[in-house]
Length: 161
Image (cartoon, rainbow, N blue to C red):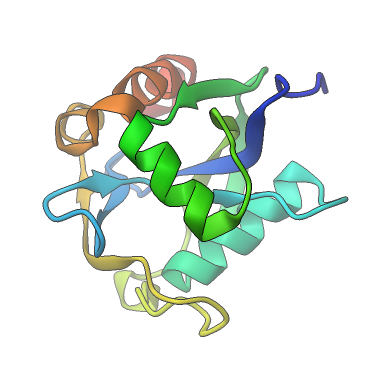
C-alpha cells in the first residue's frame, strides 16, 4: 500500500452498509446537524484494516460486520483554518488535513447492537444515528468532507446495487 501524503494525519473511514444497502451515518455531538460515517486515527504501527475494525467498535459498538473491500488509495481532505486551529490545540500537532483509507463493511448484526457510547474506551462522538442513502450522507456532511464521501461512494458503488 502506498504511503499517505506528508502533512496529513493517517486515518481510516468506515462505510457500513446494511441488507437494504443503506449506509450508517451518525450526527456529531460537537457539530450540530452534521452527520458523518465513522472514522478515526491510525495508531503508530497499526495496520489500517485493524484500525478500521477498532474504530467501528469504539464509535458504534458494532462488532458484527465483515469487510467487503477498501479504497485502492488514500483519499485526503484539508481542514478549514478554524478546524485546523481547534485540532492543533486538541491534538498538539499541526496537520493540513486527513489522509484516509476507506473500508466498506457489511453489517451482519441487528440494529440493537449499535451503541453510540461505543465500547466505553473513548468519549462518545455521536448523538443519534440512522441508515440513509449515499446522497443523504453527502447532503448532511460538513462541506470539507463531501468530495471524499462522493469519491468513496463512487468506488463502492457496485456494492450498493
